[in-house]
Amino acid sequence: MACQRIVRAGSVIALLSGIFWLAPLPVLAADYYVHPTSGTDSGPGSKSRPFRTIARINALNPNPGDRILFARGMNFTGALVIRASGSSQQPIIVTAYGAGTAPRLLNPRFGLEKGRIVSVYGAHVVVENLYLYDTPTPPPDDPPLGWKESHQHKLVTEMAAVFVDRDASYVVVRNCEFVNTPIGIRLRGQYSKALNNYLHDASKITEYWGAIAIAVVGPHNEVAYNRIENIGYYGGAYVDDGAAVELDGEDQAFDAHHTNVHHNISRNTKGGFLEIAGNTHDVEIAYNVSDDVDKFVGTNGIANLSIMNNTIIRQRIPDISADDFWSFRSLLWSICFNGCEGDRDSNVMVAGNVFVTTAIHRIYLGVDNPNGFMSARHRDNLYFSPDGDGARLLGQPLGPGEQITPVSFRNPGAWDYRLIGASGFGAYKAGEPLWHAGLTRNVGGVGRPD
Image: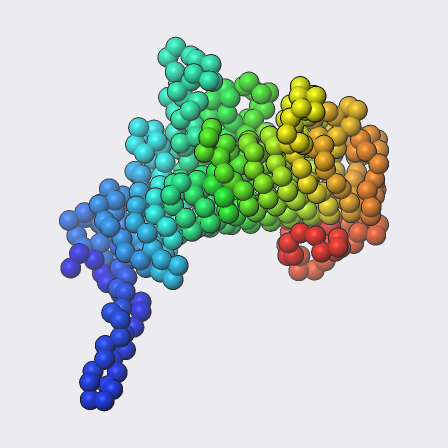
């Protein structure tokens, strides 16, 4: 036997009119175990006789329902490549087994699968319960070149600790920890999810790129319940750069419409929470906490953007950027003198959010903030600048249901961002998550419920 096989779907034999009818054959699912010290690649891959290396796993052709299990408390080196597909009922699962800490996976060679640790090219695949760390950056150009000619610059769009290919779909990356992975997760395909991961402590990629926790390229993807910390860096071509989430253009391949980014918490990301580097539409950003540096959302043209029930805090030192939102639209608009095809940022709604910023910040389009969203509508938000002028912070009159009022959070140092002391907006409640985002009152049914 090549593996330990487990029947996950039963068969039924029925006797009808004296004739045996056999139901469809069951799908047999295999468990493949990997242990770097007690395993051998000449073995069957069973729990008692596991494989030893990632390379041996790559030689397999998994079937729907198969599981690839890495031993907890162990270190693995290499690049895992999943080309096969599971099914909606029986995904292929990459996970951990045994007791102890999560399996630690490392690929130190950029020349091997472009430094990726896990690459997924098939559909219906789950990657979970792994510790992924120290992915390499592309080798520099010699001699150095500008970004338009730089081979190093172009290779950044191929990076990720977990890479989901353009033709892959229904892939779930969950419950993993990413440490010093300059691009943590890249979702090029569609209908995939990054859920409940912890991504932290990644800095510079090149002079033009800071680290990005999660990059979304394809449509119909979801980023939710992730914790992101200490991503991006100060310096380089843009003063500070990086992102918790980036809807990344990748030149002509950008198609990240119908993206949903919700219930994430980001702290000390340089470069801001979310950047949309190309034209897209129908994006929802809801119930996130962003205690970061630089913008909350920046775009280069978007239609139908909902920014709902988030908590945006900008009080870190150095506090470099004055824009909580920015758009390249305003610059293009001034060049085109109304000769372009409409407003590049259209139907932007900002509602139910809490903004706490220093005096230098500007939220909406105004006299001293030419880079805001031109068409943004805003209502039911709460604003506070401890050292500044609230009216100047907005740059526009208050919208319906909005207030400028002092607010505070229960215990941000312990990731507890529940709101206290906002008159008319409610305080924290028992049972709310520690990172509870946005306002506790209903803002007219806008956004996704907890």
